Image (cartoon, rainbow, N blue to C red; front, side):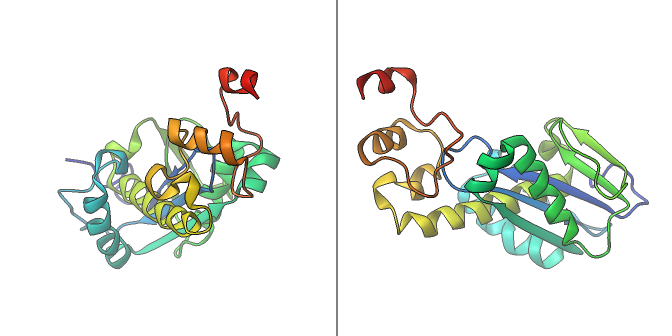
Length: 199
């Protein structure tokens, strides 16, 4: 059973991102404040949940959360400031959307930058330990997947509806054949060395 939050008596948000390791599409961040009486036996790290369960949890989180924010940071910005800074920027912007302003921020992972002097704590694998971080991970993942589904219609040859922009063999073969789209991250190593030697 996951804990609700780190500081029971504070207005505390959990924040997480999805799509950091992808070759295409945004990195998507979410922040969530849950009520003190929030309980859910299914909710955990979004990577451990099936798509069906994530889709089941999405309306529950949106309905029961005191507040939530979700933000896409697009490939151009990722290329400009790098993926780590883009992930943190996304978390900052999603926290900015919250009302009330949190008194404490619980961050999934081990890297973060101070936001408005609000105290924070980085928790490695926090999405498997705290409900509000898990809720943020589900929002980030479902919103990003929906975005990738939308742009798949524009560039179906990359099969983003299936791979969601991650570096699968099929995705890399499509890049080799069709080149890059405006949705690809130009600063990422799109093709391994063995492909490059053949070009």
